Image (cartoon, rainbow over all chains, first blue to last red; front, top):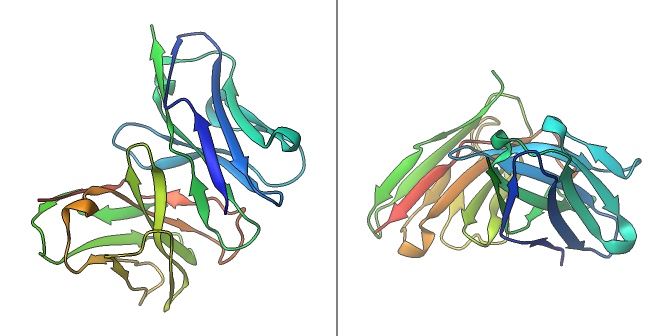
Length: 113
Length: 115
């Protein structure tokens, strides 16, 4: 069975600092990988996804993630945090068929001024 | 505006009182799904539907029912709610019927409290 592990349920960074949110997955076959963001009192919104091709994926709001098969990782980064980035971030994995997403437990990002 | 809507957004009820949470999408999507979100557990799939009249269980289907009589609607039914169903519920939809690369679009959530 697939699983997703997000290291750190809470991450705190200063405004302007690097954001790094970690995600590792377990899968016996190449997966499709997603990062979603949930702002307070809202539904989830897609940040970016990896399906095939280039392993460095760029998303909205300056975020990017790199698929590293050898490390089974898909960490999310942003060079410079903004106050508006404060939210909960979810990593998710999907297999080739079925549309089923398996989510990690989420990481709450706090941005300090 | 393309969107997934859910109603109600907030609901407080008592054990055993049947309730329905509605979900509707206006994007002509084939696939719809229900998730529940609990602290420290992320989102877990309850039921999903690949098309009209086609539904299947997700990871945590016990205590829930769904139906898909129309393409746009996918209501979640709790016949006899219990306190362990207190949670935040999300409906989602996507274009394809079996392609996992599709982006899922989420509704705003329904916060349910069962006393």
